[in-house]
Length: 514
Image (tube, rainbow, N blue to C red; front, side, top):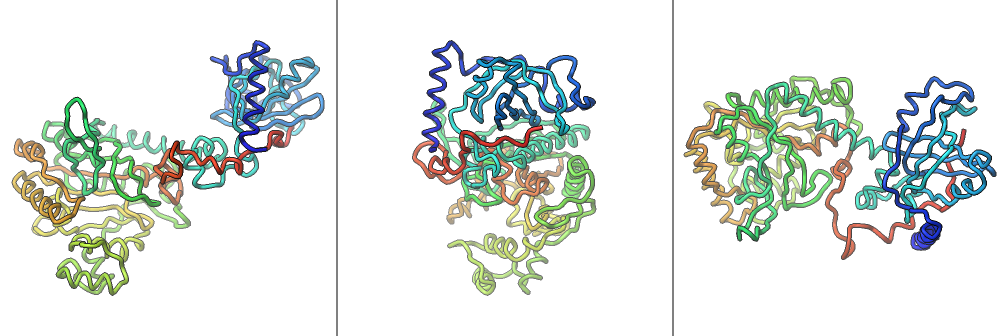
């Protein structure tokens, strides 16, 4: 039967329920137990011994199987599943018939004594029940879950409902964020919030989303990075700050990129990039201990040892080793020729910085499997970083790489206002040459630096990529609840034409009863 046919049948059930004086959408239910608490509280029951007091549970009906004058069902809540046992001789013929009108997907409440079946499964012998929410659409096919990748992302509620791995990923994501706070707070870092709408997009080389504020009659930009606001706080005397922030970049989508994403940014006064590398190592180690209970994790078949110290690799030397040439110091035409020799596609009108990035990302990055800090970036592509002591053309900057992917960015923060003004002006020249991602001149930020910012180190880490690593997920869409997707319908985000393929039959089999 089609989804619409099933929906019509269920709407008819709702009509009959209301005619009989029953409301199919309840306001509340007095739940006393969850699936997990039943398992914990009644684990000592043996044989067919019953619990001393009844338990009341509420959740979604995910399995229902008739055995003549008895029915077995499975009720699912956020903590797991509980088997229910309905008997006609206990409920009476009329109430037992009402159970048969339930559909898979309905939310129900059930109250009764807990016992253990012959097969050892803790089960509730139902003495009273209530319909809490009538589901109009059928669940994904029970035995196979939701397999269509596009449908899983477009209708995440069905994915969460039918795929245990998906639920585990997002429980882990919540734990990752909690453990980041547990790591930083005892070190004296202060969690702060900075604006998400900026008059000038800054803090990263990225194309912003633009909006208009009607009351102020001015254009604003969704945040591409919180960096310049967080460093203003260092000027104001807050010496150790961090923000778990949402950023928006009007760029392409891929397995590693979503236009809306979550970042951790950390800033500490009186330290440098070296201290930020140590902080990064220790944070990864803390997360591995907390979530994986050790220092080694596996990502996409690769075993990674997270214990410090991580390898340091010079960016310019790595590209030199991959190309056989001192690529950063080549002129534009020769750099283009090197890219062609390695059969690398390059953006039209790309400048030296962009071509150098292509060489690094295509020839070096995939080979960075073990935890590695790439260091010694050309200063020209690091407009917010200090230069290394004694090396004016090299940025005191690093990026952490694991399993062939970049996970963040950090450096000793540039706090010379005159030099920062010069760097901004150089970026504006790039913008005028057609490079839309170049930084814009932020005069207020330069003014803040003129009041004095202490020497400081900064770090940015991508939370989504970090969760990918810790959950062994191959795509960023697996770790974002509602990722951005290409539109396939003029209205809504659903993939309606695929629904019938995921629907369960109305009389679906239950899991084996006890």
